Image 1 (spheres, rainbow over the protein chains, first blue to last red):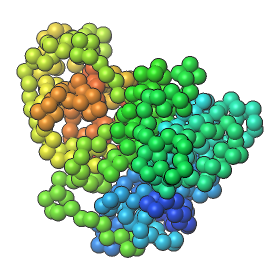
Image 2: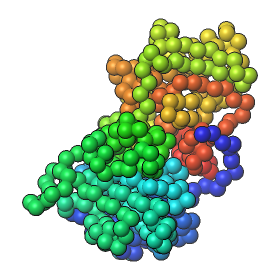
Image 3: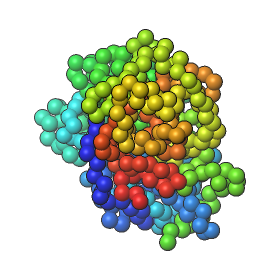
Image 4: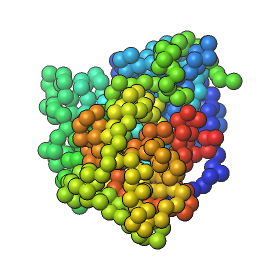
Length: 259
Length: 206
């Protein structure tokens, strides 16, 4: 896991970003489609740092996962409004099309998936932890277009949300499943499932993973993103079920976590 | 010249807090968990700690021996590269000075850099000067309790004046190196040294 240092590498520069479009995803999450000068490109799963500056020069920074696929025309971030979120309350509130802030990235070289990394792809999300995983699904959809390659790279998403109305990208996920039989999406709704709900309605546990995940001998690449308790549970259970720890990659978010 | 974001006011910390916050950080009262993979769980019976020099000479302590070494304690602020800082965290463990001193007596030759090596394969590089003279410890008590596996237990490196990814969780070995080689995050775009006060987050930050 070590390599020779490359001290002369270029700095990850701050770049101006202009809000080009705002998509309301759920009552508490929105996508900001951005126009970024000289964006260098990214890999699915990476994040960016956002820096806001007030009129008197006060600055604050946070990290956000990139929602768009590498080949998408514009960079998109999906931001969830956190209670007392200094930055998210602005990005999910006052911000309008045409507003500007600074951004640097892409950052993070481990929680990434490229088509060349292979599959099967096992994605497990809690809440807005779906964002970097959606970038992977979008990357897969736009880069793998022929049937036989898709069948060789099947993807399963297990997505835990509190309410059906909290499910981010719900329509897009439905369209994706309808158009691509090699993608399977399983929701669990932990707090207020819809009245006619027949799916899972509990937190992700071992039995659910046995039901939904690939067996370990399929050697799936697992990416888990969500709040710490979900990530800890899923990563530990997958390891206990016999999945190789090196194939289990995790990322946390939360009011104080990343991104 | 920074670009002003229309309508952004922010929530300014008070002066005392602001003085303790490195640039780009905010204070949290929680203790967030960050790691790249599953939490390894090594039993204390299996656990040992090793210092290894560039010729492969080692000194090794099992858990009983290690926890019987002279202890040090420290109350310190910690700063994560993901932007949170936590003030006044209380740690107890064995100072790297103690370990390096013991190792020297047993023929382990020190160099200027170490690679901290952890269960689960995590690595991070640190200059030895940043770990000695009271600057670093192998911590196994946090706020008076044994360190949780989620936070790096049984023991983690603690080098609080650098970004917290340098404070390797689940650490098992310090391996001396002739030159400063990149560890796990350092080879994935993060800074080789990681001083929060100079905001050395990513490769290429001055």
